[in-house]
Length: 433
Picture: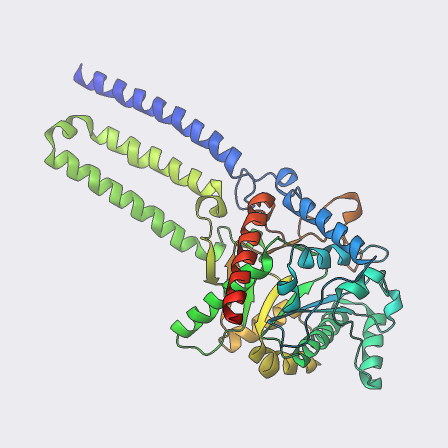
């Protein structure tokens, strides 16, 4: 009779557990749909441009106004804090460049804008091939619009790479394009150089967040006994931060450790506490440790890493899974000592610019930091090779994308930015006294 009662108790407990498990699964399904590593991932909802759409509208309005009259530019009385370099290639009748530049500049106060040097490179030997060539808004927003070096050898090489148009030609030309950007930023002696792709959207307040992250990265670099870091990443692909296959041994070990600890605690309770001994029969322990806990562990992994273990806000080392080249900030020292020589001399390397840089950093122990949350979003579904169809609102499945970016609150970001502007004005007044 006692055994029957206990068995009924175990069955009742397990049915209650299944009910709670189902409720937890429903909750996680509603919470984790933005995590590409989750079984609950819903790409049709997660890829909707919510905050990006709001920011793009602001950027277009700023660009339209910039086409009508001059806007604030870099104050050339002092070296800029940040040089922003954007290389842009024709996308065959479609362009994101106005929105990209507009999102960078919209919302900046005059003091912030005067500390930024904006370089836009239309990366064609014949720049009139680009959709935005000689557009009034571009002339008014950019501080510099460079061309390829006035060197017949370089011009002939780039023209040949444009004609070839294959992957290797594109990768090699891309490095030359970056060398033009970096060289232009080096001319004005900017403290930092940020390279952006021409199909990104920056959040309101990106500038003060970037400066704060750079200060933290510099401090953490000194704490590690190093003089300088290679870059600060302001965007990374959220798809790569899931349950990575090379880490599965760690996941298995952690799961086994949880089971061992649980069994040890239950057996200790059974041994030392008389009341617990009656409830914790061997059958009950088996159901708890052999059925319920594995189900919970499975649900934990199924929910996705980004959902269950999101990266904490701040600046972190990212030597792995940091993709791609949408937004990187380099100290001036790295630009002059390493990057310019690297990008100018890449005849025998056919890797894409981001892969090329990561390989070099791995071989030279370069420190690579990343800021969380990211400061920009990649919105370009239509590449310069014709892939994707952003004109109809679609984003390709394989494009780098940060799914948490779309959850930004424009009102809160605007308040944060305004508060920072007010604080900077106070500091400026104190400094002038």
